[in-house]
Image (tube, rainbow, N blue to C red):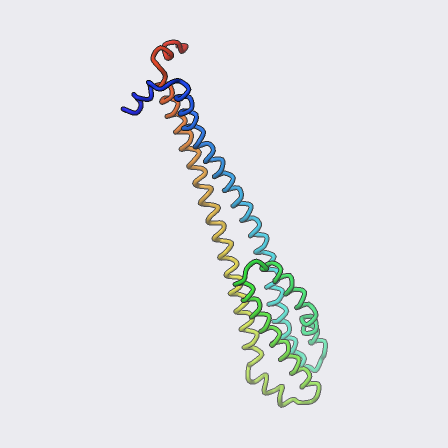
Length: 221
């Protein structure tokens, strides 16, 4: 109260400056907060698009590797080379799919390391299947039988699938974190508008109370 009493004795220009400062600073703050919220929502939308693009590539890789494993079994059981089509498709399409995936994560070193390990495992898996196909065609059935009974192909495929699933999970967590931040900013913006409105009402009364009594008497009733 003592501050308000002293403020009444200030020159009018100081009072106007003070009232404008008190009212404009919250508005500027809310504008900056609104822009930050908008930027965060745009970032979330970009992350959603990126997430689905990444998922499209990882699912394509996972489906291809599963088809390679099933095709190899079909080839061994039936001697029908038609079952090898998924293998040849995987050999042809893996590099383009991998390039698209790497391009999506080019700014993230930790994701790049994950993809590099996945790439290494997939190439080893395809090379293993290539050796078994060649062995089968060359009549080395004992080697092929040993490979099937050892479960190495199934284990290699399971390792790739687990790594891809883990990669997708990290991508989902990243997206959820961006969404959480955007929701928090949106709540702050919403409550901030109410606070600024309340401050305006308070400052309106404060402004009237700060004018000299002779000016208030001149105000229309």
